[in-house]
Length: 292
Image (tube, rainbow, N blue to C red):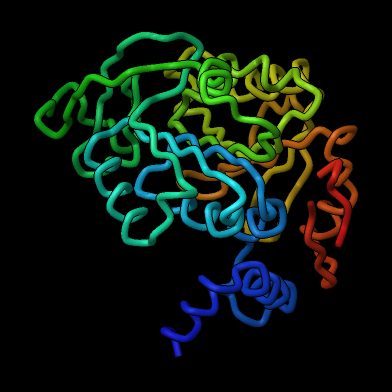
């Protein structure tokens, strides 16, 4: 049965996540929770160009590619060499190399070389600046638990320009606290006529290592392009303000936020309705975004 479900999930992801969400709404099984995959299947449409910043080994990259299809593209960024190699093999085996463009790079607000630091027991927390908690508690006392390697930083704006990417509809960004520098390096894209929908991680324990609070990230996005923010949690979405001083969520779950520009995406009321308790589900496409 699980084998058949996995085939159905890979062949018909939109229908699969539609059914999944309805099970969430029925609240019959506690293991069914709201998750990012529901958002992706509702927002990314055939032919879309999307960006995955902090792809790791492709946890969401492959789904993005399946949803975007042959007419679309996924530009995936993963600077850590071992994760990048795994991601490359997974993309190749999935026969999605024509859709997914892999970049062994990190994004920031400047172009330079930098040192990437990696907890060997939890490489998903690789970062440019060591943190003070969780996988980083023993960084100073037990340095052998951590690896370092050189990586190259570029800006999102330069990447988009050099690769002549048009009409980017969606960006997922999970970079262990460096989210603000990433979007500062993509300010021209955000200020354009069609800023993309964003799904970002915001965790204060990580961002303070980079010298800012998550509210600084939200404030930047609001001032730059008029974004509004919704916290992803097990029951759906909750709207928050850009100056939210005490963020909801716990490590390591429920730290992601959906960011939309109502005047551009024209989906705010429908997303709220879709993700906060109404059993009837709709799929979205953007200014272009109307309920189908």
